[in-house]
Length: 263
Image (tube, rainbow, N blue to C red; front, side, top):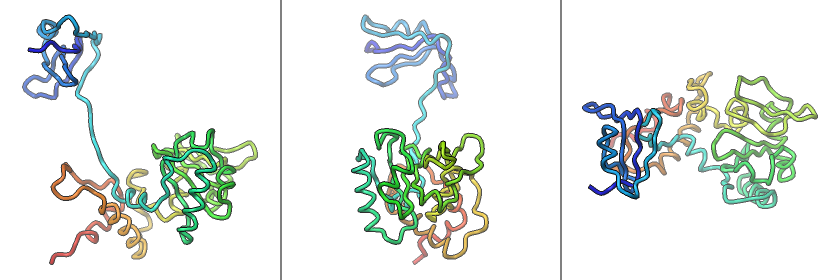
């Protein structure tokens, strides 16, 4: 056997193998596992260039690799402005103004992939007001945990003067007693998303609850459009998709209406 590049030993290894659920050490070469077993038998594989790490009794288990999509959110995302490749107020502002011209009827101009230093420092509503002041605009961080909104968006969502939030969610307030524009976590920026007409699509990752009141026909049609748009870029039949589940709460309500009718 080729001498391993790396040995992890003195570990509580959970192998996920029902025939041998526990082990003490593992050897690896080229990023792949060579063997799993007792510490002494794995140590015997070591060569002169093998690096050994003593885990000190810590637990070791296989990595978790899970790829997924939120189909409805993906459909909504396709209608948004994408600014992850931009930096600075001048570039972002120009992109917003161009997007606004192309979308005169959008209630909210939402940008995606706004990294936390996209404006060179903490973004505020005043920064976004300088780009567009007469229409609601907002931008979402790549991790989907923060939104920055301009004054018009904060007013439209009822957040300019702050709002009571559950623990961990915050409408950041300024010294002037008004919201700065930074909205941390979903309960804080949910009203902005809802103003854009995408609140129901986001319920699945926000609260897990069904929309209340129940969507009317027009609302269901709007959500269905987002879902179908998301499915248009989903992997085709035959690709390695292991399962499909309702990560979007409203999917349960109108999923049968999204299936193609039988010929």
